[in-house]
Each structure stands twice: as C-alpha cells, then as structure tokens.
Length: 229
Ligand SMILES: *[C@@H]1O[C@H](CO)[C@@H](O)[C@H](O)[C@H]1NC(C)=O
Ligand SMILES: *[C@@H]1O[C@H](CO)[C@@H](O)[C@H](O)[C@H]1NC(C)=O
Image (tube, rainbow, N blue to C red; front, top):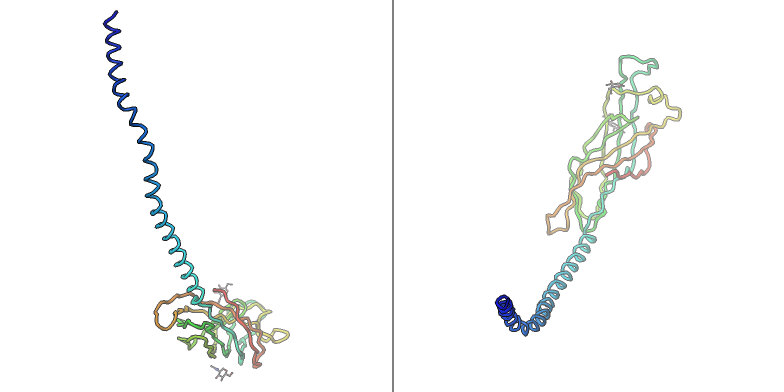
C-alpha cells in the first residue's frame, strides 16, 4: 500500500520540481511580440515606398501614352468622277453570258495624319471599288510615308472592264436617276512611329468605306469615309 503511494508521491514531486523551475520562465515569452512589430515597420515603409513609386511610374506611363498615343489616320474623298460606267449588254432574261462592265473611276483621296508627334508609314495601301456588293477594280495608292500633321491628295484611278453579276435593276443605264452608288474601300497596314528619336512603332490595319453617289462625268464633292478598323 505504502510503496505505490510513496512511489506516487516521489514521481509527482519530480515533475513538480521541473514545472516549478519552468513556471518562472513563461513571463519572458510575452515580450517577444514587440520585436516582430518593430521589424515590420521598416518593411511596411519599403512596401509603401514601392507602391508609391510604382503608382508614379504608372501615372507617368499613362501620361506619356496619352500624349503620344496615335490618333487614327483619316481618309476622305475630295472629289470623284465616273467617266465610264457601262455594261456591254442589257439582257433581261438570264443567259449564260455574263455582262461585262467597263468602268473608269478617278478619285482624289485626302489622306491625313492628324498626329502632332507621330509619323505614319503605309503598307499596301489600296483603293477597291464595289458596286452592288461586287468588286470591280482596285488601285494601289501612291503614299508610303506621312510626317506629323500632314494631309496628302492621293490619286486613285480604277479603270478597266470585268464580267459582273448584276440584277436587272442594278444595270448601269437602267437606273432612273442615273446615280450610281459606288463604294470605295481603302485598306492597308498603317505603322505609327513615335517621335523622331525613337523607332518604336505600332502597326494596325486600316479599313475605311467611302460611300459615293456618282453621276456619269459629274465630279462629286467632299465625302468623309467611315472607319471600319
Ligand atoms: C479615265 O478617265 C479619265 C478622264 O476622267 C481619262 O483621263 C483617262 O484616260 C481614262 N482612263 C482610261 C484607262 O480610260
Ligand atoms: C455570278 O453568280 C453566280 C451564282 O450566282 C456564280 O456562280 C458566278 O461565279 C458569278 N460570276 C461572277 C463573274 O461573279
């Protein structure tokens, strides 16, 4: 009876001795939290400075973009003349022979680079004629480069003959008022160059549609073209 009790007391005393020795120590663990906070303050300063610097750089970049970002080139038809627009046959009944359209369209296009700090390079710029949703001719446009704030008069001559699928109502010569709705599409690739000292360029495709209402041999007035891309 006594042995287990004594033994129990003996064993209990030893752990008590140890805990008794350890108990005074717990108070010190409480102070440690402050040091990490003191270390966090310089870290926060660094992070906040980095955020501030990045924000400033971002704002500056946006400003530069805003100042330099190119405005799209503009195209208008200054004047256009349809000297010839006729079909070799006027069959009302469907036949196996396709009518041939003879055309001669001369247009003076006003091509503008509206940017003050951006020059423009043109690649494969061309004018394409459409009548009744059918393409009848195309012409390469002789403009390759434009400095800042420039407008050039570019001549496009679409002349030739081509088999066309027309509905009877669309036949040239059968239109009551003699007005031909001819669409001139101008397309190509435009490369914008920022400033004079840099070669940084942004390329984009250009596609504009100029809707013309033309009477034979009568020169049209100014027509702005709608930008499609
Ligand atoms: C097209 O018409 C113009 C006059 O508007 C003329 O000078 C030119 O020679 C014609 N071109 C062709 C290929 O017929
Ligand atoms: C005309 O249209 C028919 C079908 O509507 C087509 O098979 C033919 O290739 C067209 N011809 C031309 C010259 O576009």
